[in-house]
Amino acid sequence: MATNYLPKADLTSSGRPVFLQNEIECSILSSVDLECDDIPNFPLLKSGLLILTTHRLLWLPDNNSSSNSSSSTSTSSAAVALPLSFLTHIFSTKKSVKTLFHSPRVRFQASLDPSKSVVMTVVMRGKGDTDAFLAKFWENWRARAWENDVQTQTQAAVVGSSSVSGSGPGSGSGGFYTREGAVRMVGVSGILRKEQEMWESTDKSLQEAFQDLNALMSKAKEMVILAEKMRQKLLSGSNSKSSATNDDEVGSKEEMQDWLLSVGIVSPVTKESAGALYHQQLSRQLADYVRIPLERAGGMINLIDVYCLFNRARGTELISPDDLLRACSLWEKFDVPVMLRKFDSGVMVIQNKSHSDEEVFARIKALVTNPDTLRTGISASDAAMTLGIAPGMAKEHLLTAESKGLLCRDISPDGFRFYINLFPEINTDDVYLVKDYGIYNTWVRVASASRLE
Amino acid sequence: MQKLGDFKLPHFFNYPPYFTLQPVRDTREKQVQLWKDLILDYCKTQKIFVIGLEEDFALFSNPVIERSLSHEAREAFLSALVSEGRAEWLNKGHRKCLILWHRVQDWADIIFRFVKDNGLEDSVMTVEEIRSGIESRGTELHGIDRTILMRALRVLEQKGKLAIFKGTSADDEGVKFSM
Image (spheres, rainbow over the protein chains, first blue to last red):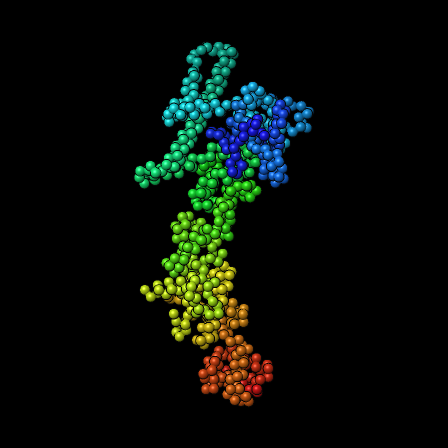
């Protein structure tokens, strides 16, 4: 088992890795093998998805290509993760004639346990920018993002006011002092010195500028951590709701929770990081993301709403409507619990696969068969209020129920209303006949009673 | 139960969706069937032969529930009758519709029986006399639409049961029975 050597990586229900706190996905490559000659019985990790993040190197079995799906069970390779902190060395690739014919590979040394370090090889059989991957690999390994986490976490743990402590970069800029009147300028060497000083000062201001940016970014990270913490607190608070004192407090709490829930996706899939696998990965991330909004919307949500929510959660890495649509249509190929549905009217929604129209129809039927609505029918907004969904959505449900023969319509100056469908109940051989039971009978009684009033 | 003159209306006449053309096929088929039956029934009891689409027609609106048929719906229901041979458009614009609650062939049979019953086998009558004469009083032929009557007479003429000829005045025609 792979897990004997490498830590197992958790995946979401739609096959996206579960990221650590502050972990950001940087690069994705497909058809990658992970090999290790130093360990006997090292599992066969063949043609999977390699994801490089700021913290880890993840290898995921590729289970969406149908040809592989049967064989993947036999190799039973689970997703594995190699924390970048385990890495002791990345070998630089030698360019030679041999590398021209081989699939590009990256070798690195990692200490899986303190006593022993092994050499592992990443073999890239698919298309993809190998050099860019290697550069990123180096960069992330050197950046040691996991160490920052430990710092910020301990800082955050001390007090909530960690954000004011101004960790590092901000105060560091004080070290750049200016040299006052160092050398007199004489002759060519003077001009050269002046040139150099100018160059140095530009360089310095540039560095400072970037340092400011870095400071901003690290602040932003802190804000996200803070927001995350508050969300956790609120979530745990809502579990023990019995202690809620008054409605107002609960209301503001819920509002706050709403705000924080939309704080966002920590590591949005981008074209830059995922490349050719962009839509596929986006699709999986969307499937994970949409679960909570879907639950709150009662199992069905308009595509336009999802677009707004999803982009809001992504923050700056906005996606186009086209990307969203493509991501949704890819769901058919993956095993995800949600699906895209197109109504006859052309309206598109996302719904749970477990969502059943029957249940909605049953509620609609109950709604149109009470004595009042039997006589007056219902409008889309009536249905929206009762079903607790958006009027547009309610109308789609009513139209679907109509097409199934459950309802029929009434268009008049009063508006567009729906009634329970009585047509099948009427006997064409004797139009005056009303049976002693059934919905037609009830309707006749209700309708004639109302006229007598 | 609601009435229109002496005509008894069915309960569903107060069902608002009955007055909106239903888009779903099964529902619509049933609705069209109910309208066809009601139109034929009503016209038969009220002796109505022609329905003008743009004129007020008692059956096409229900003041009790404040609903009336749209032009499209009227045309749809009458067209359904036309396609069954129970009605005919009188012009291309579909503005007037001739309702055949008896088919032309049935009308011909009615005339045939009328002639036999009254012992008119070899006599001569004007078309106007058949429509409004003493003999036809109390029968279905009384007040029959002239167009339908002429059609029925032509059917009989083709079978050699009678001969139609021009009368003395230009607008009247005579019929010589030979049954």
